[in-house]
Image (cartoon, rainbow, N blue to C red; front, top):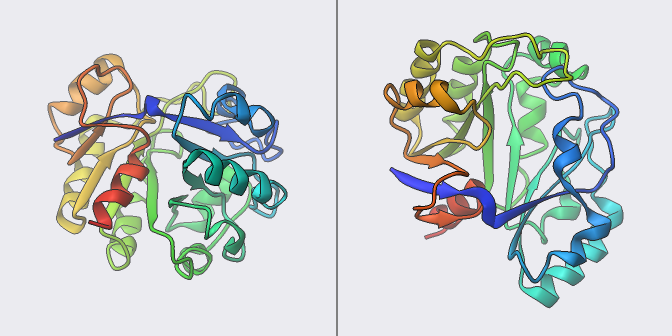
Length: 253
């Protein structure tokens, strides 16, 4: 098992909030990200950055107005970028030359997606906005994102296996000040089933950085064997930085 410590990559947001107010996130996580206006303060301390932000109701994250700045900093400081995009209707070609890797979330059930994000995309529309991009792309699924229930995850794996060698599986975290704060994480036995299927279909299966810690994780790791385990608390690790950046390097070997 490869251990990845994500602390070597700094999360950057191109927005100061998220208008969609998704039920599992509620804009909470964006508050802990550094706004792109302050990115210059960190380019000597970090060599890789996660670039993301709040989505519009069109599913788009407004990267376009910061392309010049990101290009300048990348060239000057030899930076790596992982762009975690939203659900754009068209491929975000503006980031293609800048991105070292592109991360995206996937749903095989547009109704489940709409319930959580208040916007919907068919699986085909999600892929139509992703596949034309030449940059390495890493799909993400949050297991149990629908208030801790397993809904679309199995079918999503069955679709993605035809296009990708790697998959990042995050696990729903009930988060304070969100609509899903009183939900429970998915049952460990249900998560185990998802991971077992993923192991059959993908070369690299990652337990991503977003997952419940403590006793839940302890019990989970007794049941699953991911190829890559993202652990921010680990002092011993094989790679320091975002797991998508690690996966992109592995895929281009």
